[in-house]
Image (cartoon, rainbow, N blue to C red; front, side, top):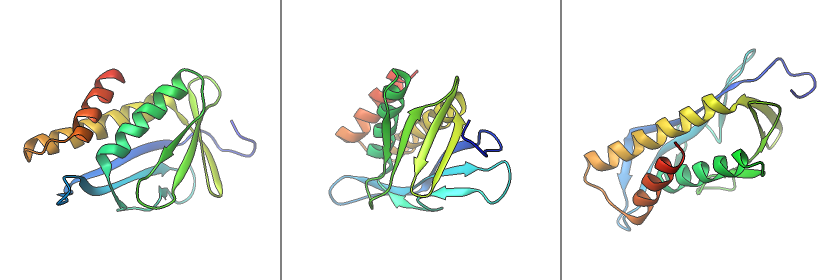
Length: 148
């Protein structure tokens, strides 16, 4: 645990399927952000609450990043819209280290992975419900299966 830290935080991947839209180019846009539930103080949203981005490829990248970290490598959680990126690396047993501009937090691997997989499944279910299909959606489906 980092010095001066109160303890690990929970990091949730937030998607809002009701905000999803299909662009003329066939990409899915919608709300996606990371919610850091701090043990003390105000929660942090990265990049910010209600952030609009491209959830399908971003979630796919994050699943790939988590797989790299599980194999002992460092990775990055990138957003497609804007310059936002968080370094993601293994920390002490069962914890991940998230490092962003001006902050560093540890979170349990298991809860972050569960939240990420749930967000991917929710996103895929909404795309299926709306009858949307694309290479990005197929890739997210494959990565979510591989992450299990």
